[in-house]
Length: 633
Image 1 (cartoon, helix red, strand yellow):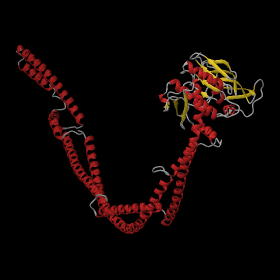
Image 2 (cartoon, rainbow, N blue to C red):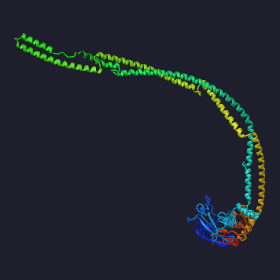
Image 3 (cartoon, rainbow, N blue to C red):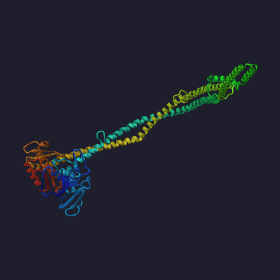
Image 4 (tube, helix red, strand yellow):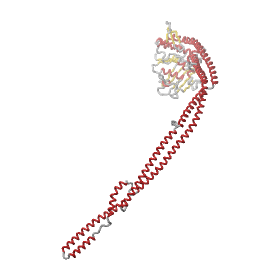
C-alpha cells in the first residue's frame, strides 16, 4: 500500500492537503505546525475514530483532541494505491458524538465502490495488520518510539518463528489455563473449595440430623401434654370467669337499683321543693324572709290600725256654732238693756265660730290624708284591715316553713343519692377489679395467669418444634443427603484429576514457550542488531530482547550489555528504532508493504547518526513507502 494524497478537516487542519510519493518522504515543519495531527489523521482514515472512548485524567480522546478548530465537521479523504489499484477513501461525520463514522471507498476517478472494504476493516485490509499491531510496528508516534508488547503482536511474531499460525498465543493460552485452574482452586475459592465446603456441610448436616430427630420427638411429646393442660385450664378459666361475672353483675345491679330509687326520691323532693318555692313566689310577699318581712310590716300594721280607728268624716262645727248663737240670743234677751254686752257676746261668738271653722278645716285635711294613706296601705297589701294583713303574714310564714321543710327533705334525699352514687362507683371499681383476669387476685385471675403461662409454654414449644422440623426439612432426607455426598465425592475426584491435568498442561506449555522464546528472541534480536549496527556505524552490533520487548545492547568494544535505562536519549531512540524496524520486518505481512510513518522519531540524534539513520531509511524506502515528519532540516 502507498499513500498518495490526504485532505483533512481535522484538528487545526482546515481542508488542507498533503501529497506523498513512493520511497522516502520527508516533511519538514516547525513545532506546532500540525505534524502530529497529520499522523493522527492518517491513523484515523485507516482505522477510524473510537467514538466510545471517554476522557480521563491526563488523557483526551481523539474525538475531542482533534475536533476541527473551525467548528466544521471532522472529515477527510485519502488517495492511495493498493493491489495496483488507485483507491480513494472518505470519512465524514454524521454528528459530533460519532466523528468520521460515515465511510466510503471508491476507485479513484470513478464512483465504483471497492468491494469488501468497510469502515471497520479498511485499515486491516489495506495494511494487512490490526490497529494494535500497526501502532506497535510501522506507526511511530512522537515520543513513542519504544515498543510495547501485546497479544496480537506476539501472535504475529510467533507465527514467523513457529508454524505461521497467528491464532495462537502463549500468553492467551497461559491465561486461559490459569483461568481454568483458578476456576477449580484459587486459595479458598473455586470449584474444589466449594465442593469441600458442601461436603463438610453435608456431613455436618447428617450428624446433626441424627441428634435432632430424637429432640424433635421429645418436643412433640411435651407439646402434646402442654396442649392437654392448656385445654383443661381454658375450661376452668371459662367457668371461673362466668361465675365472677355473674356475681359482679348481681352486686352491680343491686347497687344501681338502689341508686335509681334514691334518684327517684331525690327527684320527688326536688319537685316538692320546686312547688313550695313556686307557691311562695306566687304569694303576696314573694320569697321574702318572714322575720325581715315582719319587722318591715309591724309599723305599717300599727299605722293601719290607727287609721281605721278614725271616723269616716270629721265632726261638723255647725252644732257648736248654733249653740253659741242660741246662747248669744238668750243672753241678748236676758240683757236687752245692756247693749254693749250683746256686742261683746256677738264678737266672741264670731270669734269662736271662726276658730271652730279653722279647726274643722284642719281636721278635715288630716282626715282626708289618713283616708288616702289607709287606701294606699290597703291597695299595697290587698287587705281591708290590719287583721287581714296579720292573716296574710301568718299564711306567708306557713308557706315559708313548708319551703324550708321541702329544702331539708331535698338535702336529705340528695345526701342519700350522693351516698348511693359513691357506693355504685365503689361497687363498679370492685367489679372491675374482680373482672381483671390478668392482674387481679380472684381465682379466675389466678387461673388466667396460669393459662397465659401454659399458652406461652405451648407457643415456645411449638416454635422450637417448628424451627427444628424446619431445619430437619431443610436438611433433607438422610438417604438423599448420603447419595448427594457420594456424588460430590465423585465429582471432587474428577475435578482434582482435571486440575492435575491443567497444571501438567500449563507446565508443558511453559516449557514449549521457553523453547519458542529461545527461537523468537534471537530472531528478532538478530534483525534488530543489523539495523542497530547500520544506524550506529557498527558501534552497537548486538541487541538482546525479552518477550516484553525490553531491549539491551552492547557496544563493540565492551564485554557487558547495557539496559535501556543506562543509554543516552539518542542511543535509546536508535535502539528502539532498530527494534521497530525489526518488528516491521517480522510482523508485517510479506508481499505488498504498508507505509512506515515516523513522527519526529529522530529528534534526539546528532548530525552523524542522523545521516546514518536517514541512509537506513532511504534503503528501507526502496521496499516500502517511508513518511518522516520532522522539525529538523
